[in-house]
Image 1 (cartoon, rainbow, N blue to C red):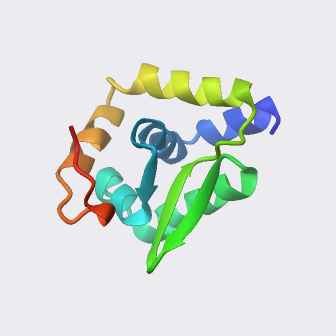
Image 2 (cartoon, rainbow, N blue to C red):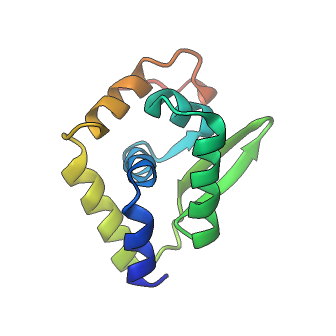
Image 3 (cartoon, one colour):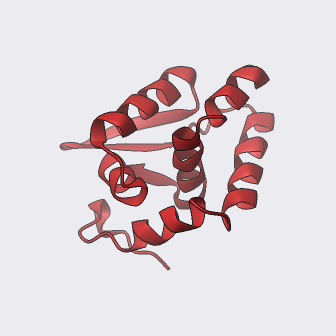
Length: 115
């Protein structure tokens, strides 16, 4: 991954919000993104597909659910940028609201609960 490609991906608000949630939560299902971001499944899936094609995230299927996480094989420099960005924006809106909304979701896949 080239730096300009990573920064281009993160320059979109929806993709940055998705990345921040993944950096904090580790792995999330598409349904969790739609709940937290209050956006449509097609829009979220389109952004996740672009992120997957670029190598920023990886996906796994569990029944009907698609789960995503930051690609553990990202170059170290890219991992540090993602981690730092998520930490720095975590207390700002809409990122803080996204985390709160995720915690309000009932019946989360895998019965994950927020701290």
